[in-house]
Length: 145
Image (tube, rainbow, N blue to C red; front, side):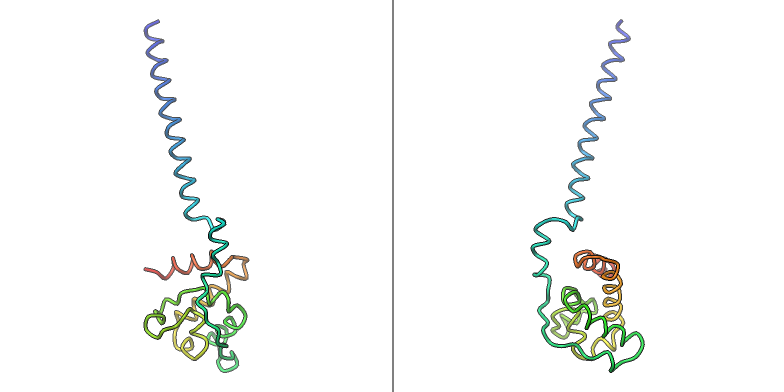
């Protein structure tokens, strides 16, 4: 009888520890989801604030060839997305650009692979149905080292 009582206490202790761990993991998982989820109402309401505010027209893709023409065409097609992205060639700090879109109002992007690559990635993700927050997070993660 004493042996069964010890086994019951050990079983109860193990069960209690297991439940506590599941609760901790459950809350931790929820916390991580809340950090990385793009579905929160605050983020959705705040999408407009992501815009850099570039209002000038982009240059015509006809002025360029190859990858450069493709990037300038993308700027014409999805300006609101490019205006919501930081340009990792640091042109904001060095030239006062408002956003990645600013790189396309003159020939800056034609001489910068970072500008063109960001635009092409953004366009490909947009065509896959990704929202602006997903695109921005991907580009930030890829380039912010």
